[in-house]
Length: 606
Ligand code: M6R
Image (cartoon, rainbow, N blue to C red; front, side, top):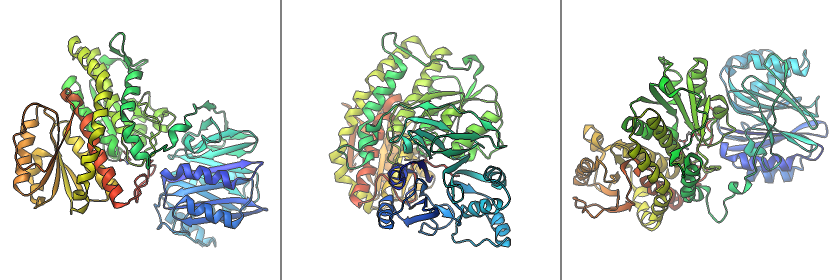
């Protein structure tokens, strides 16, 4: 969360900083700010709300300067207002920060005793005063080394100095940070996306490192202050994927892109001629893997949950799944014969990264399923399986969910084949089905009209439930998460068979309930559970697949039918109407769909 940008140039920097902040807004959007070295002084402009408001304030302020930093905030310490907005500055130092300083209260006491005065409620302000304090005695580099040692917690920092007006210091522990190289100027940014419109030449800071960026050179240091060399990566240019085109929202575009998500991913992993799955350079001996642990957060966790069903169905592995924020603090029994799979769209989620780091430190076999291949999780896992979705900008994860499921399914099939858990005939049949999946997904997109006509019932209700069994249970969780996240209405995802153990008490007259029941092995049981909620007054939206067979239930409020496929692949088809339900419910309420309240796309704090 929070986005950082820094530019040192021979040109004015406020306008390119604002442009980059617009790109970084998906990381946080409750307040924004900029500071430059303007006529020899640190000058800040900050405001509550969006970058649009900051842009207006900056143009009124006539801010100049060739060195500057900017920030978009997702509040952790202190309410979102102008005072708490970053940058935070003393007379000589200005700081932007992404992360949390866990010992800020202690440091603040120490600094107040030394006579420092605090303006904001943030943890970040201690960094400003600490640097100011150390600069009284130390040179810039030594002061930075000492300050970084004092800070507990996670951070990515951008710092400018009145007395060193030609440079920016960047520092990283936990939260991601990139450096970009341009003609006559260099940059600091939370990610390559923020820098892409200015350069495709990027280096990444690793944990504990810091850098000094001048307009014509960049120096990198380890935490002890020893100079280190960095690789410069050349990124591909895919700017057009960052535009909304004719769509009103990124989310709508990203939902519609899903047939292509499937097609691209299938093309990357499936050898159509030899009817085989290509996973090259897998660094582990399949025979040495006896179990799989899948780890993620939010939607990525839901894809792990679905994959558990696939792995159990198609392989003989022992399979566990975990929510990263729980895994990282449990007393885990690390197993040498386990493959730990980390799933993340952004590849920067703090909890997922920490869980990966823990496994790496314990010398485990780690693999990641990510969208952003330059991300920290991708870089630090031993093997990477990209989902090839292209940028996902809307805060709600849609196409990345389908991409994650697909790659996990493909990995599952490949391991099943390698271990001879699956017959050749079944393996080939499943590959054939995958080749047809994009077409089937396309049909699921055509549920628009019906969804639009029913979403009022969801937004007007006190709450709603999403029910499913088997593969459809994690889909139900995902459907409920989407509705909560975008339309701000209470929604619960539940295994249909669990309703009678408590949640059935919530059902009352007119309550909307989504039942996800494709005609798989669980169909009849789920339909019975559906009848139980209908009998108690629920308005049921049934999501099933097309069939000649009649549905044996009366009083279903609405039905949506997706195409037919084999049981394994239904999650891909039944998810899409749920994404649309959340989208149109939020649209009807007039909410900010791509930037729902209180959230951010990349969750880089705990
Ligand atoms: O980038 P990641 O996939 O690691 O993000 C994990 C979750 O924060 C994310 O899926 C979140 O739940 C989505 N906003 C849900 O739509």
